[in-house]
Length: 581
Image 1: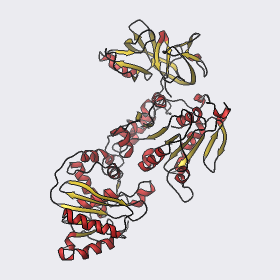
Image 2: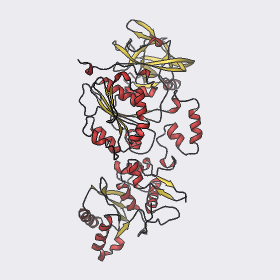
Image 3: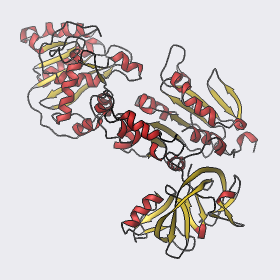
Image 4: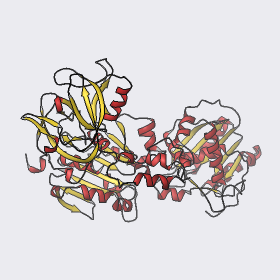
């Protein structure tokens, strides 16, 4: 086997000290992993803890990369990383047979609850197990001599200097004091580096939505963590590192610019992993595209999609929190348990965030259920509201109105939404349909559904569609049936809303909030609604974020959401005097 085909073993502890949940995320078998909210404190034992090796006991403080330790399955594992964790609160964990060990509060245990031996083993922190024991629950961990071992007490015993280790066994387990089995794992840039070291000739892409933002933030982390001894060369112009085992780590943005079109480069590649920092900045389409590139053929490869972000409504929350899709896993990493932050940092942030409703709960406590419209005043429609509306069964009844959003080109879609009473459905959604096809489809649907109003986007090519339909239905009261809609026109309540589009979506938001709407279970529609933002202007008027600004943060035109809003915009014949935005 050539050197380039060998798995590299490099001590990353010189560059990176993972916290407990980061280690757990590193060891996760899931293909797609989201780490959200912040980072946590370290999983560790005291330096005096005895670790079992094939040659007798050695102290945790003596552990080094390359030392062999005993695994509960009878095999031998090798230490591949050592992580100093500083001085921490420690706990004495005692067992029914008199054995005991001293560990930190967030030390991870593979344990099961209850007397039933068929209950599944799961990962728990020491603090979580203490709570279960205090509540009189039976706790068992795997045992070397028998199938399980009963835990009887967990008591605080002071503060000591601590350390944890990572082993190369697939189960991540090793034996400590009195042959007690502990669990070990090991996170976004560090995981990407480890995937590159473990699988020779691997290839990955680490990114944020915008290249400029990536270079000022995530790239600095990657540069700091990547061991110099692993690098053959750094191709700065092409933005990738080449490692001594043939692996390549590409980096940059997802959003195309005049100078860079990253997806043109990636679409011809096969990847073994990708990592998106601050994933809520970008769109689900980019995530799905990167998923499709996980086809790199490398021996024994483990494909991975890694994401980080703070709690926010949208596609990330839908995939990882609400739906919990197969092979998706979320690890909560909170600032409150991060020992590496400056002293007093969290207290200072709580003071700073106190004037911004929802920020403390979202950014310090990791709460995904904080209403978006209370977090810095930008979110309009909560994702939880759209989810509830998609599960609500309301009857079809009068009035019957159409909302028609007409594509302006590019990747925009033409969408027809039908509102019957408080229930909505998408009748047609297509990319790049000629106006003649749209007009024909509208005539067909008007005949079938007999709407009393057809409100259509009358900007750009939409005006020609409006005039054609108006003329066609002239003898049937065309002016009452075919109604032009211009989002930049004046609002009816001009003292409250900057323009018609702001007013229409605000009224739609009130329907969602009050539960007076049902929508199809369409992930694209729900994501578009959750991505809408608004602001309060200096004149105290509500202003919806313009589409060009949405595009600058990587959000496409919300075509389905616009069509839905028009279908429910109940004010007939809105004024057409257009405002400058």
